[in-house]
Image (cartoon, rainbow, N blue to C red; front, side, top):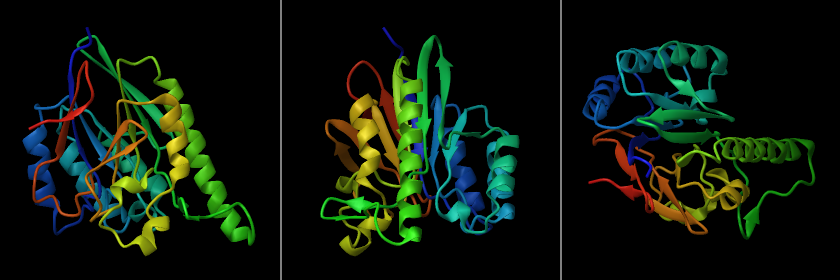
Length: 247
């Protein structure tokens, strides 16, 4: 029987000089209490290298493994290679368009990660048609979908499997956000690999005022966006049954 695994998750921490200490306290509260920490993008406020360095200072002393994907904010200053290098040097395992497997007392935890991208949901979707720039947007989402498919396939044999994204793969976690911006908050095209591989848990951020709980088919999806970490991370437990939110 696979050992239950506990993970702490948060998206949109938007680390900067203002909230650095608050974020450090949040990490301290889950350090040693969970098996892994998952960050669902928007690790920084504006994608500035200095902001990544602040987050690196926080995570470097941790013994709990940290996994992350990037968000749209992290791309803003076009310093992604430098930003990623700083975080990886501090021990963060970046799983953008990739995957990782962690062994926990003989039980395997697989994490497939992508940033995801825009594109919309039924009744308002971006087609692969028209101006080249719009078709490039469609192609970028396609690359994210294909990477999620590959990542989930790679972790198919793990005891517990998590898909970690920034953008939403379902509109069920967008309730509360203005409907006019849903197309910019994610794409239901990201749902196809989830439906095919059926991970135990899907986590995303980006929707700051969306709903916490949703689903893709019968796969549980949680929006863990926390614009300001005034509370602890969301903690989930994966065991023999469905994943559950830990109290």
